[in-house]
Amino acid sequence: MAASGLPFDDIRELIAAMPGPDMEAANAVRARDANLTKPAGSLGRMEEIAEWLAAWQGKGKPAVDRPLVCVFAGNHGVVAQGVSAYPQAVTRQMLENFAAGGAAINQICAAYDLGFKVFDLALDLPTGDFTQTDALDERACVATMAFGMEALVGGTDLLCLGEMGIGNTTSAAAIYAALYGGDAAHWCGRGTGVDDEGLKRKVAAVEAGLALHRAHLKDPLEVLRRLGGREVAAICGAIIAARSQRIPVILDGYVVTAAAAILHAIEPSTIDHCIAGHLSSEGAHADVLARLGKVPLLALDMRLGEGSGAALAAGLVKAAAAVHSGMATFEQAQVARKD
Ligand SMILES: O=C(O)c1ccc[n+]([C@@H]2O[C@H](COP(=O)([O-])O)[C@@H](O)[C@H]2O)c1
Ligand SMILES: Cc1cc2nc[nH]c2cc1C
Image (cartoon, rainbow, N blue to C red; front, side, top):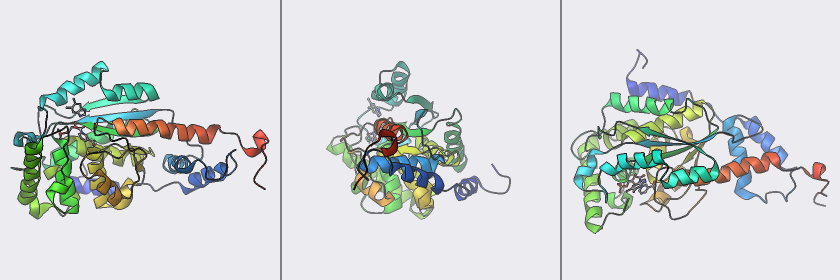
């Protein structure tokens, strides 16, 4: 923490210092792509992905050799309002399942050869219930963002972000309602599968949170600490650190995108190195992605979380890098060019 300022000011300084895209690298990919043995443009968005990788890796030859899925887990005070279909204990139980290799994300990582790390963010210390108080104080919020930054220390060349936290779709809904306005009900989906009564409690919790914190919601970092969770704060940190270390990022679903939305609200270009892995069937994910200017790679009617949509998209991103770097040119393969 700089001696000069408040913790949140340090975050704003980091954001202001983020590097931009390497256009030379992106142009090198575009030039090589024009010589590969395929009709121009025939690989569609796969071509864009190769350019995007190059621009944010800062390499004319993009490569995905060490892809990593990071799942951040936190617990939420707002579950006291009866907003989830599952008990809070499931957050820890699923971490044990991740460690044992029994979750969906374990199998996706195995299928696509992705590294996998899980971070327990003080699970025994749920955030404050945002209908009654702040979810986090400023120090805890910044410390958790810093923890998310540190998560990348082992190194990776493609980061998939995921989360686990019973109750966190209510927190995400509150964040979106604070950032974008509109009815609380628009931002609330069924999460893990709440019934009609549970959905009503969820909408009421978001409305209560907005009413309580209304005077402080102009600053996106205040939205994060008052309504967010530890996993969302850590994901904000990981997105920032990835940018500084030239690591492209794949976002997962409704909850991970809430972290991206916070950063986008501070400065839209902050998430230029991020792509949307998939369109979640939760709540208003399509609306959020449209506001962020992101077109999801996949739309599989998934709403699992735990990084599953990002990890599935990583398979495509890996393929895009391999296709670009491994294909022969017209000259090499002695294939005739277009007349
Ligand atoms: O990422 C999504 O789009 C998503 C949509 C619905 C549920 N989830 C997962 O389900 C949990 C939160 O659901 P809930 O109902 O407890 O708020 C949390 O562990 C998330 O990973 C995730
Ligand atoms: C079983 C279960 C698995 C999950 N993975 C991500 N969120 C989850 C929520 C539940 C309830």
